[in-house]
Length: 141
Image (cartoon, rainbow, N blue to C red; front, top):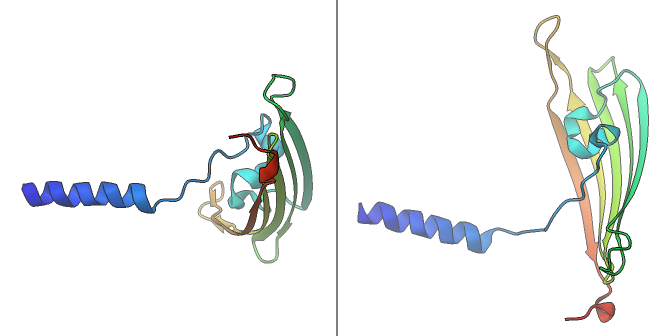
């Protein structure tokens, strides 16, 4: 019993110490307008091509300094001869006065498995490049 408790304690400490936290992801109110941001399985979810451009300013004029600004662009296409969809997602998020920002550029791939005539499963993969940055001299601590 005591050894199980020690293993559990070490496991919890290991998860806390060795887990990276990256903060909150941007939230879009019209999530259906930005499907590739939700999941890579939406790449090629419609027949043909799709382009999406979204922008948001959060907490403008609330006395919190500069607003959080996010812009995203996505493009995806379904290739019926391969039962596959590919997508490109580019997103830039800048938070507040310190210009704490993140740039994400990702390629997505999904494959459409037909289970029955009316049932499909579409798993997806996402290859992502992320760049973090800030202008620290403008921050107050």
